[in-house]
Length: 111
Image 1 (cartoon, one colour):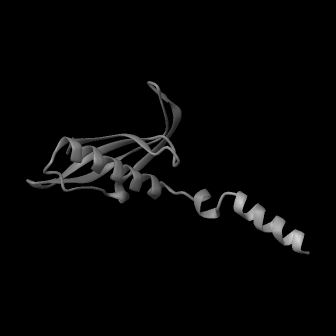
Image 2 (cartoon, one colour):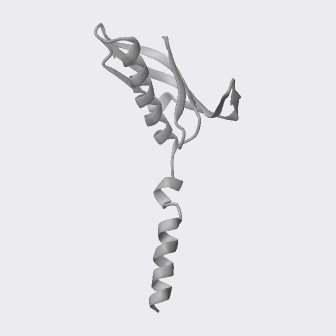
């Protein structure tokens, strides 16, 4: 009985958790927001925040190389870019390489 219990515990520890298997589009968008914020902060010291409007987002499954980088999904839609001059509505695109690799590119265009 004890051996069975040890095997069951070992199997539970080795299998991926249900939480990691249930990643959603919104997890990818959160990663895009964070990646974009880091990128924009490097480019503009007055940058405050980058907020994606999740209701407007479209997701395109891609699963191919872009240059030397693998991209699994392309997110695009509306967002808010806020810097010292206040919030501005923008359109964004995020190339996402999967939940383990995260976003590889975020770009905004004025609306």
